Picture: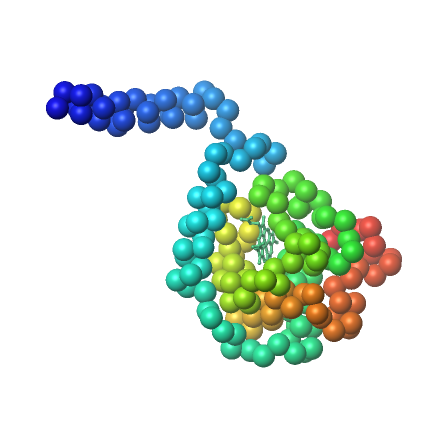
Length: 177
Ligand code: HEC
């Protein structure tokens, strides 16, 4: 019994005190360039996926076609490209200074074409807490959220006219969005 109480005391009081002292006087990661905390990524991803499983829409109320993609491209350029980049462009200034890093969603290596559009819709609508990914619920209409989500889900097979829309023109090339 005594051993159990001693263990409880240790667990309940001492460990949190050390944790507090470490945060107070140690060097917890607060700068974007600091390394992640142990398990930080795992914890964030587990919670996000549990929530997505419960809430993301399983099918899109809109059919993807060239018109929807063009609307999605306009939404993307205005609201997303500043962090997620355009086609064939160097990583934007803002993206380079963020933690976690915003994936370059038009770069074939980082596209979200494997995610169902409902997942991207949920993320664009609600944002991702403590990551810098904003929620656009208050600023974009539902049709716009779906248009940009369908665009990103099909980013590897867009019509030429849409790809052109997402490529900075030569006079803008090199200029950051
Ligand atoms: C201010 C910068 C910023 C803007 C603007 C922004 N995002 Fe993000 N976004 C992020 C960051 C940072 C992440 C990475 C979050 C993470 O890793 O947890 C992210 C993640 C995402 C993801 C998840 C990618 C993956 O690999 O799972 C999607 C999808 C996404 N953003 C879509 C959008 C869309 C659509 C818009 C515009 C309507 C947008 N974002 C605007 C910063 C931004």
